[in-house]
Length: 159
Image (cartoon, rainbow, N blue to C red):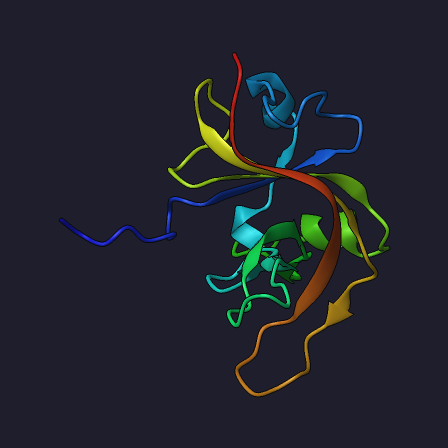
């Protein structure tokens, strides 16, 4: 069996702040009304929130320092190309001014706007973007750090 890669499978759609009523079950129409920015994101351009905190459950009567899973969080960081392969610059237009609120909907099987698609949904507010440093053979890119307000992994898209 071939390896499961992200190439041509990951779909990244941004939906306006008022666009999703229930992040546990976004509708196909809500996601479909968003903008697919997949062509603006390089292959290594997404850093998903990865903060996982532990609760200290150790006590003085035990030598072992035990822990239990606690809160989750972190920043969603996305690198964008200033222009996609077609020469469009929609990502810079959308996120260039900073403080953009909305929802990122990520599908991992080639779509994210069809009923029964399993998706990750992040309610976010984007910070002011930072341009990449110039260099030889380097296309212009920028990075946006999105503060995550809430998220729902493995949400199921409703009809």
